[in-house]
Length: 301
Image 1: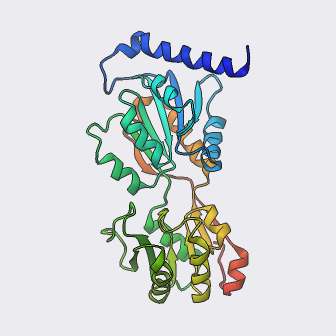
Image 2 (image 1 turned 135 degrees about the horizontal axis):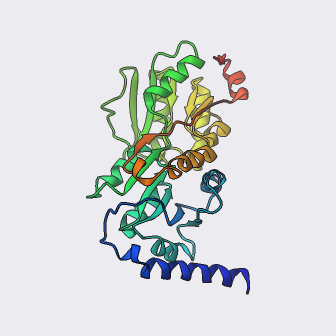
């Protein structure tokens, strides 16, 4: 039997178990569960980021725990989601699109969301009537924590600017923002350079957000050139932004997001149902070349 035929046989066997086993004939909705029968890792895209998150998750789970990887857009995504929609099953969503898909398609399995910013998660959860099946570990580092870390590494940082899109997932006015933070809204790529120029004139550093309407492959070169000309450091939220030209990046590495999720899964489901918290994994990385170019000294506390 070829590997492909074996894979499809396993898929349909799993689906049959899910449809006909006594545990899956239980009342729909939240059900008590001692251990997970099956776990599906559902990625928003089949990209390196989500693959690394999955590798971190797989590395910490015992091999006897059934774990399947699939990504939206793949030919096997829909049947795997359907076969894992059981009361004692778990769907681990990686990324915002994966959670949006699971909210619409998964009615009985528990859902643990990772690789997602808190504001994006809260926006999706606002449409969910029953929260008991859902848990999340947010990938973003809280704003106040990022500011405190930045100040430990960069002397003289008093004011910080945030540039965000008008239609993005983040609130135009941060109600909980510290007094030293100013937010500016960009209404599209046409005014992006002007918005970053104004941000540079109002702050000592610019903090980035995971807002793809602002930070994406089309815009990143213009952003980096603008901030470099203004002589203002960019404090990124990902390794990709560090490579692109941010001075610092304060982020959770993808593999460590996966291992953090595994630490929850290894506990009985009743111990972490409904957990929603920021990641406890973080690194501070420095772009030495940018530091030299901007003539900024970076402390190593």
